[in-house]
Image (cartoon, rainbow, N blue to C red; front, top):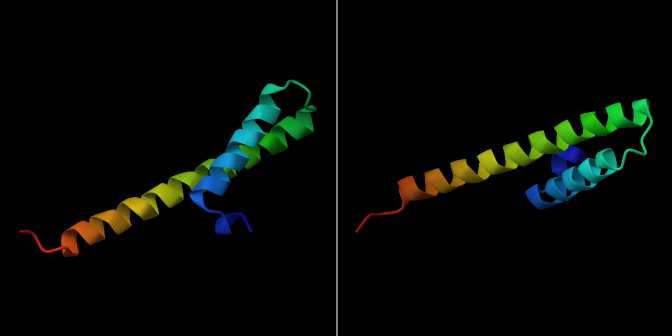
Length: 66
């Protein structure tokens, strides 16, 4: 399901996860899981940004110049 997240959804989940990690109320296992989740959401954000960059580049290359 996480691969279906939009950039905004992944960023929201990343922010929520980081806030949980900053709360100091997590057990070690919960902190490790939260760190793994944060990495996953970060990778999704980077992937969505890269996809957007490529789309913009392709569009710029195919648009006629005046």
